[in-house]
Image 1 (cartoon, rainbow, N blue to C red):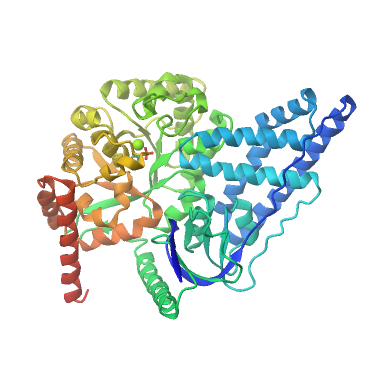
Image 2 (tube, protein in one colour):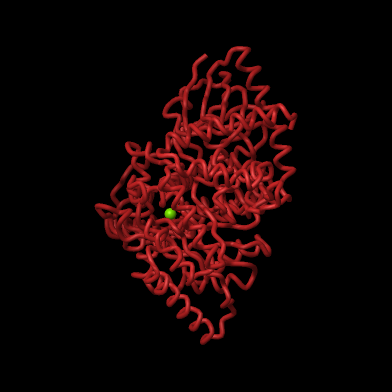
Length: 583
Ligand code: PEP
Ligand code: MG
């Protein structure tokens, strides 16, 4: 028995035999062409793409019936790659001008695109490389006429192991007999993680060689909550995992029961529970977990799915679909937040020495006014189908807010002039994620409809710690007095101006912090759908008065360490009391 640690990608526990999924990678050989071959070679490329497209369409259908329409959306992004003009142009140009065979020309084009994506430190970009590889291999198989996927579901309930599963591999596998996943590559936002969470099975990614080394049939116990993979577990461990699985089922059933209940404390204080999402596939999960709306839609991820900038109509289509699916629940569209770690050369942003302090968020949008206005117009058009709001990222002061509002006014005037159906009464809010926005919160509140605290960046900028740098990650201290005071100050400033204040950073997903956020007086918490029921449960159990006194105690402790210790003791004591009371 050995324990290996990876990244916890989907919570839960499972024990079962390993079912390895391995695929032979096709590496095309480069050949030189005669002039006369150029035409037929271009045709071969078109035929191979056509085969790949047909196969993806079949998979989408399969996925829709097996897992539901949302998961199918993941594969649709592969269709977009196949239709991408840049991919076509570059491949056909290489065939025509460099006279190289179609397979090699196509593989090189995709390789270059993947290299560009890998340069970008943002994990989601890296995950898209998986899509590119998947499409590349599918088209290369198309050249050989072998388009069929050879993968199939395991015959007995098993744990799928792979270096990295592509979305279509997951589709071909289906969910039958799938107990969980272990993968050597990937991160929290990899497709397999999203799929595992949505079908409710555990997944561990980033196991760096452990997954692929597992022989078929070897027993493993996986803990997707903590990212532990135990090989050849002994009887005691196996029994423990079975127990954990049973407990998990009971807990989940209880939490599912909370879905339609509001997050109201026993003394009558309500907090609105919203979901953070990046892609349309997450909408249904958010609803299933009982989200009252989307508190943060990171629209840049919708842009990143396309190799080219989506047009206004494309955006209207994407946004409308999400707004429609949320019914009358609010959807807060955060306008493009590129720059920082989220881009290197997409949309013309270049690498900078200090990207987090550079051309990021609203600065980028204000400098790309047309692009910004197009996005605003698309949101206002999509808003006719439901309840949309606009939120600006990285605001540092009133000047930027005014400039951004000016763009909104211009966009609305153009829509009106052109007689295009839209809404002009959208609430406009800002993210409070810079220390200057905290200190100017009263001035900002006077000119917008809501504030949403972005704790990820607020911690980064307040404690001067690069959020992507592992060496300083110990400084990610949500309970640092400067952070608690910043949040309290922002909430008070917003309330004084009569507007609501939410929080949409990762802090909102930490169960141990739920009572603190409640006590800080936030009106709304927006978090990953999966964490929502647990946080709601804490709020429903905790008195608002008591939560406020917890904050009063924490806010004057001199260090984050003191605060962590104080809170851990407090939570342990509360748990003991509750158990004693038989709750
Ligand atoms: C934040 O900064 O807390 C936030 C929610 O935005 P992002 O993580 O996208 O920067
Ligand atoms: Mg942010």
